[in-house]
Length: 155
Image 1: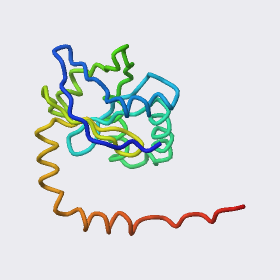
Image 2: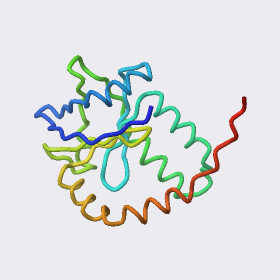
Image 3: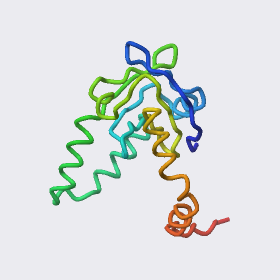
Image 4: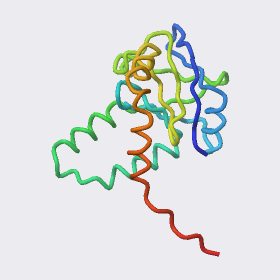
């Protein structure tokens, strides 16, 4: 199930974030209340289901570690990734180092992004939107041009 939507949230004093119900339900569909936080791109934190994180890790395992940039990425990614568990109120605790990495303050935005969610500081998300919304048509064309052809339906 593709994760979608934009949800405004507040991080409490104990660094807990309530996972939006649609995302929580999609993550639980994967069979676990265990989630993974990891560094994302453009200043966000990525949030994966356990299954989604394992699937991503399998893809990363296929990258050749022969290049220094790949080794550096793998170190930075895995060293800062962390397992978290939803509590009874569907909250997760964001580790201090990830709060700092993403510049998260009290007000955040949680986005569904297909196979994972992203947690953005609200101010940074608004800057990202302002800087990229006008490019949507161009970005759409580029992204859709990279589609691989669908395999034929057997039947």
